[in-house]
Image (cartoon, rainbow over all chains, first blue to last red; front, side, top):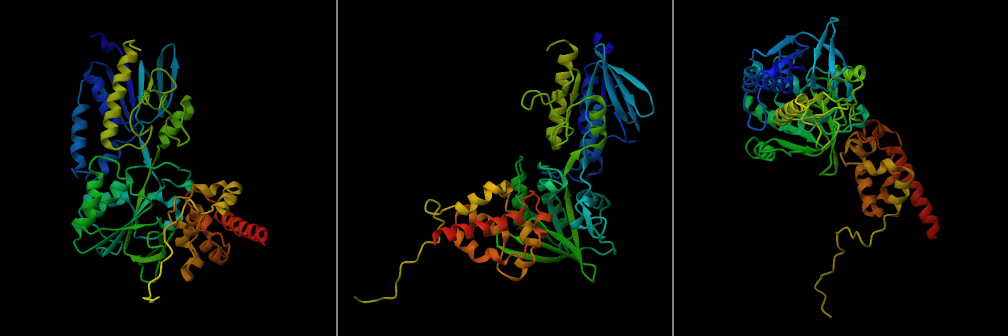
Length: 344
Length: 114
């Protein structure tokens, strides 16, 4: 196996990193997978159910863990990569602890960070107890209990779409594209957990452009009686009884709207990860106006970077769902093999 | 002739061909962010004037873009220019300037008409 001599480093052990590292190891390459956390699976490992079929996220994690269970793969967790340099056709990957690792090719699968909702101060995240993020709600689902700060179950829950997405005020012009369908999924799940709770979604546009997303939207309306209000939430405050007061315009009714809610869930968007941004800056890798890694070609080179031999996989290039992330990771593997076997 | 109390109603349709969008053009030229509005309603949700009177900046935007200027003309002076709408606009529209320019445009075109 001549391939065993060739070494590939994969940076980031989320969905994209696990899939691409596992496949390269299966092909006989010596793969080192770096993960900054002490566990693999990235954001998916914290999630409860996935859209649109609402399967358990644990299923995906199990699939990926089996992928990386390979003797050609060396997993290094709790270790941050800082810089990548190219020297005489091979790569030196530096880690935070001062070590360097050599590789013939590198895949960056550094993923995304969830938008820090406290940056949208007018929504009161971190100020009011019962304003939570979509990720916080997933944690509650996992614990099997949706409750307010006072321990009671909410009777009314609102979802705010586009928090940190499509918003010039926070510097993110792009649509994170997963939040609409996630809000619909979570709205249904709140109704499943709490049969008598009323649920409202505040949206600018419902972007349900994926397989079976629109069907889920319809299910939320017909089966679960979720109310959809077209208007971006302007401000949130708290009344004397600790209930939240939400203000928006009901743009379809053409009137300003005020509603009291027990709990408000902010649909946090996706941003370029801090770690990825640092690697980009230190290694001369191009990023786009959206701050994600800029692919060499948007259409036929989305896995390629501006440095030959460094490739991208997954949400470090743009917001993607898990299906797209896995496909993108597989495409990265194909590009890496072409590069290592001189098939360019 | 016998009168049965019937009358021909004026159509409610936006007559895009007949309507003039000169007010919108005036604003658009001087404040290009006017074009970026996505009608999310964040401005009108936070608007103090809109909470008490029939005034929605979002509605003003779309009406001017469709050339339905009469309603805008009759309502645009209600704005107090407080600028809360600028703070919340996710598209970075300079909403206060849009209002100022709309008033200016009506003034200029009206004085020309006289």
